[in-house]
Amino acid sequence: MTTIMTPNKKPRWHKVGVGSYIVLVLFTLLSIFPFYWMFIVASNGTEAVSKVPPTLLPGGRFFTVISHVYEAAPTFNQSLLNTIYVGTIVAVAQVFFSAIAGFAFAKLNFKGQRYLVLFVIGTMMLPSQLGIIPLFMLIGQMGLLNQLGALIIPALVTAFGVFWMRQIIDAQIPNELLEAASIDGAGVFRAFWGIVVPIIAQSSFVLGLFSFLATWNDYLWPLLVLQDPNNLTAQVAVNQLKSSYAIDYALNMGGAFLSTAPLLILFILVGRRLVRGVMDGAVKG
Amino acid sequence: MTQPAVSAKRKPASPWKPPKPPKKLNNPNAVLSLNGKWGYLFIAPFFFMFLLFGLAPIVYSVYIAFFNWDPLGTQDFIGLENFQLLMEDPDFWLAMSNTFEIWLLSTIPMLLMSIGLATILHRQYLKGSTFWRTILLVPNITSVLAVAIVFGQLFGRDFGMINIVIGSLGFPHIDFIEDSFASHVAIATMIVWRWAGYNALIFLAAMLAIPGELYESASLDGASKFKQFIYVTLPGLRNTITFVLIVGTIGGLQVFAEPLFLGSSFSGGDAGQFKTLTLYLFDRAFVGGQWGYAAAIGIMITVVVIFVSIINFFLTKRISSDTK
Image 1 (tube, each protein chain N blue to C red):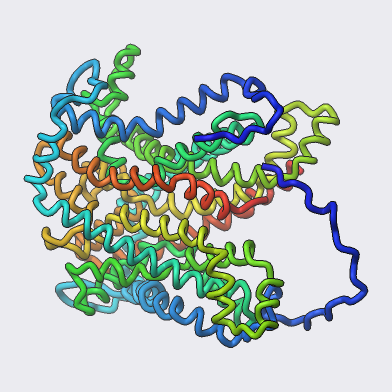
Image 2 (cartoon, one colour; image 1 turned 120 degrees about the horizontal axis):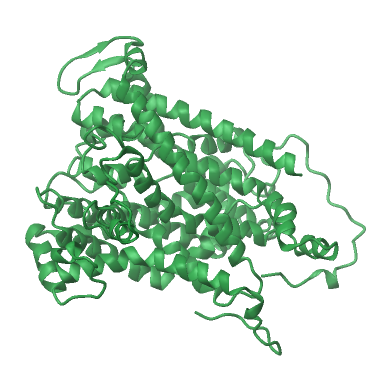
């Protein structure tokens, strides 16, 4: 992690009190500790959680515990692949549909536009769980129960994505660029592909990442529509490990670790972009 | 983070002025040289999918709420009876008070922590700011399930690390599952852990958008750091606080994943001590098979969410205009 230092100036970190750094270090430890603890328990076995004082160092039983996870959930790898598959399709679709709708709402003038925007914003207020029963009926009638399509099809568009893209396109694309393009004879489609898409590529990536993460972590809906143990997502597979009388902490945390590790790796690669994305999308003022 | 001034070389104003756009535009910021009619095509996929999989189920659940709807049996129209039963249902009111208690226990500490963290990150000479910002987002990307498994163990009565710490300080162990208030604290902790850093980034973005001159003139006038925070930073965060509160309310009043995992069932603890509204909805729908009743609960959640959002909106508006 680099800090930008202005040339010819000594770093003036001492201007920030030590207290601030202590608070930040404390928050860092709190943020990371649950992941660390997951690994500690998964590598020490369940006995580790009943020791006073608790074990705080990794043990040597990690692979034993992981093999227990695969015994209890033999299709765990398939579940992980399913999650990646669903997450990728949902992310790409959400970005595409949000971008075209966001573009229309930000830059095009058509009748009823204002009310349609208000409609999109208004629907963001509705609790998402409200329609879950009829949606379950609908997906059942479409014959999608126990199929990954049950996760993909209802998630292809979100009001949030459209709203977010509208904000981004409004903020990042000057009208003059599009005007110049249309003077050169570009129509709506060429203006979109040629000018808007390259500029919003970075932000689209961030929206896609957030969709991917949300899909990865979604739990209740997959639990309802996927009941075939050979065709689950990672979250549902982890949940299956819980269904024993005595809680096997090492097994649970081993599963949780397996389902979280890919996200942490992804985060190490693109975390800084996500930070930018969160801050770009913030309401300021 | 301040942008270099670019106004130094401004072009001389040209004598030609663009004609003013006609007044009643549907979109005042639109590029008029592009044919707006295509807009309908661009928004069509969103509206088609959203109406079918988003809005239609919601409308249909309003319809179901007027029925005694057994998914495997009969569907009888019963008018407002579900809502009448709901008003007399002690479980519903228990879920309501639990939800509000968890919401209060999570929202207020989260707001204070986020603003505090953002204030620290806003320090001009902070070292490693990119690193701190990135770390703050880590809790937000993890699944609620994984978080709940870990926190469930950490909050354990006998061997949870939190109780070991409490015990070593000489206090009796707290049962974070059986005790109603303590279970709410445990759930609120998971929510705060997940969202404090994320919201700190939102607040930081808003703070960075406050013009630096405001701070300069305040410090020239002799305002202390604390006074600058009260009179410059806080008013600058007004809309952001409203936004975070409303989003937090919409999410907070629908909380169900954390209590679901804490108790491993839809009942929200043996005595329903951490039963929340959304958890009760799922309990009635998928355990009780009372879809009409569950739909009625969903409508009540919506009413409460909208009501509280409106109160939030006016309250933050009022408070911030008082401090002006």
